[in-house]
Image (cartoon, rainbow, N blue to C red):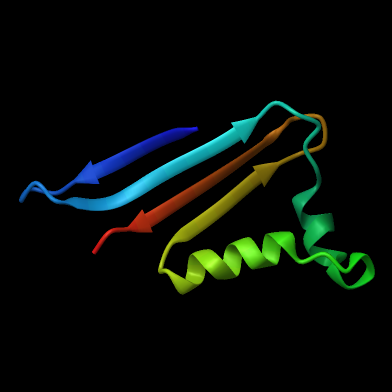
Length: 77
């Protein structure tokens, strides 16, 4: 995990930026998002909604055979 805190001119943190990535099998993000009803799993939707509720930005990059990277930017103010 790679975490960075962006510091403003007044010395206070403005955002926390976290990245989690792996070199695993990866997956097709679009296909996963489209197949929630059939699979009954809401993991990615829940992650996105949780981020939205705290005012954060979540991005997810993954491709079959290429691993996965999740980025989360959380405002601290």
